[in-house]
Amino acid sequence: MAYDKFTVLKSTAVPLPIENVDTDQIIPARFLKATERTGFGDNLFRDWRYNSDNTPKADFVLNNPVYRGKILVGGKNFGSGSSREHAAWAIYDYGFRCVVSSFFADIFRNNCLNIGVLPVQVSAEFLEKIFNAVFADPSAELEVNLPEQTITLLVTGEQEKFDISSYKKDNMINGFDDIDYLQNMKPEIERFASKLPF
Image (cartoon, rainbow, N blue to C red; front, top):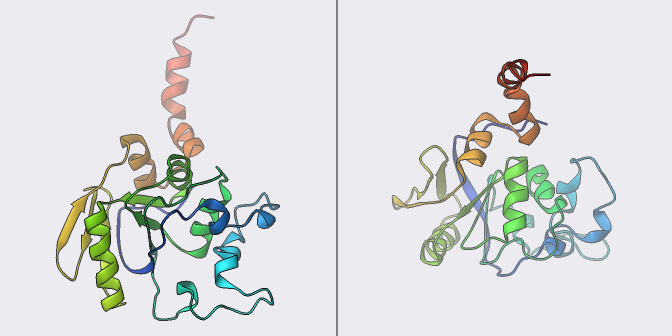
């Protein structure tokens, strides 16, 4: 299934300065029954967002109308814990297209890249600057430039580079998942196969 193409994203950000956010906190296990990749956004951070009677918790950032945007800024070690793909699905389905942290769990990072969410790893110092800027002014924007592999705090102009594999970068720019990538290569594969002896 193809996803939105990702080139340059300029957006306000939602700050979640909590370290060691694991996948069970991102999407609790009781919501993993569905096999479609839709509907998970409703339960993103479910136990942090809602009380037991399903009323919103006023002090949780996703319930604060001041903070909006397509970029989620998390604390160090974001996405640790179990390998569930549903955590990345929930983030995408909620509307985030980028997650920024100073460290990501490897499996979570790959799950994000597989479905069109860009994980941007920055230094601890730059992450702190982002949090400070967003808390000072929720309208502060970040610019994430995938072709250039840069993230810029537009209010100050400060910028950092981030790493991404060339394969995943190309897929995200084109809106491909792994199957789309192979299908796009079908003519080349068929030409190669036609030259093979039988």
